[in-house]
Length: 222
Length: 209
Image (cartoon, rainbow over all chains, first blue to last red; front, side, top):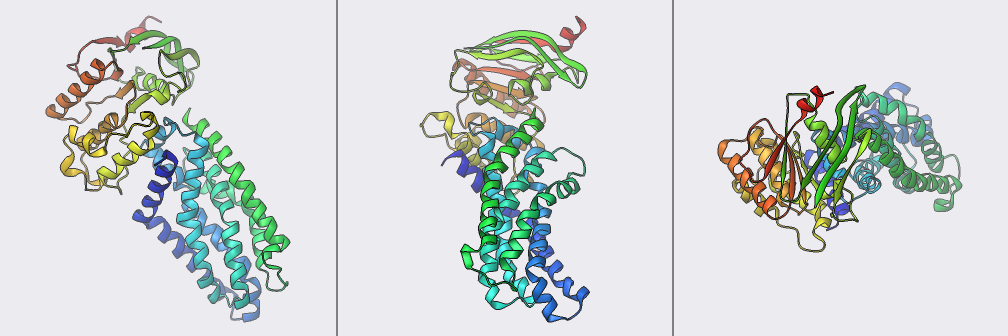
């Protein structure tokens, strides 16, 4: 097994065995989506109109909860030092960690979104597009999030700092993500411009993310 | 094979923790770093491991593997055990043997079980690492040394929390490594019973300044 796959597998195993981070994120997602209609009142038309935006914003916030732990535990127990001493470049380590974060957090959250959508009276026809847009858009969360997690690694109260740093960078994903699902607009499926832009943002962040993360880690380690 | 440091200066903040240090360790030798707390033992070892950048001077491994950096030819066992509490001891060790598998140049990495055996951890291999005592964690960390072959061993207080028997095992393991042509840099407060050791007092070097 290559070192890259070994690292990816270990991180997934840890995420599912510890479970608390994923549980918290999923719980947070459902709670936020559930209390929103209570605050807005029982206007079904209003709810289904804002549903895509709410689902996206809640997902970003839920994923944010898990970001600070991405490199923190490895730094605390000394694993990060050893990872850096292997033959794997830091860039690839960053890919493995972000990919593991996506598989263990963003993917379950995306699959949970339709359940949350029921609470918001989301149009049934929007479901396939919703799931597709979340699956295509969420890699940006993990890969851009990796940079910020690495930057705030040894900062005290790093968790709050991550939120401040990373949320502005999630704005493009949010805008195109929700407009891809917008029920007021006829969608062209996968060829919809919003959908294509969402894909582009994810692809770009998958390239920039590991480079930025590796640079940040290098600065922290030295 | 020689590990050579020349005119090494390492700054932490404004203070030169390691001022103008030069030394040479040859294959089969162990350099024992001693000195009071805060004299720079850990700093020096971390810079050898590539985890701290020296402000001046060079570190190199002569006659080593030219395709690998110094850090990639070093095993580092520090104060932190790099064990994941949620994984079993064997899973932890197996992960590191897979992660460092490239060191073996295609040969099969030695099994995690055998490495654990050497440090008497066989019976504990299936329990989560979170349940280990401090000494057992230290032994599990040291077991990493045997997973793959790397010529330079950097050990920071390897005898911390070890009992007498485990310290004996560690000394035997280091001896075998040195006799096989490896070299080691060891920071310690306790005398170690190993072959071919010579001492470098770090606080003495500072007083000269």
